[in-house]
Image (cartoon, rainbow, N blue to C red):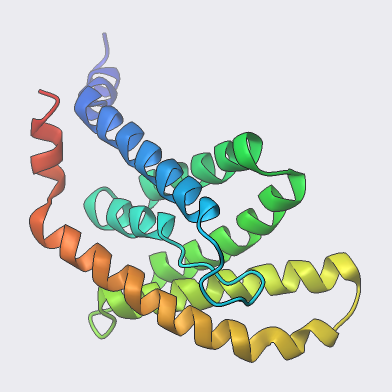
Length: 180
């Protein structure tokens, strides 16, 4: 066995894999619960985005690669289990747009977890709006932008606060200890 192969082997931690699976499960459950709730605003497309808490936590606890894996897995599984190809398309557009904003700004000290959560929520809404404009082939949907900006601001604050509260009480090392 070469030394580099041994290093790769040491980087695989079953506990980490189990916790990432748990995080994926929690994200799926939160997304499902949210889908069962009636729209809290009466405005189509406006949701709390509770599953985004898991993305924020995974980014903080494990990093970009793991958070992206959990995010894409959640979107694909949710779409296959509870949605449609269109829901997967919209969720991927919004989720990836939000992810790259969050992953980029999370490492700037001037941005708190709540701040990047707001950026992510607004980015998610804008990503979905762009896909909607391309799908229906009209720019008139841009008038829906201010509603999505305000809803992204409010839901981003809420999910960021919840993620910060959870993060206060949980660290990756603590989660990994559950599976050793």
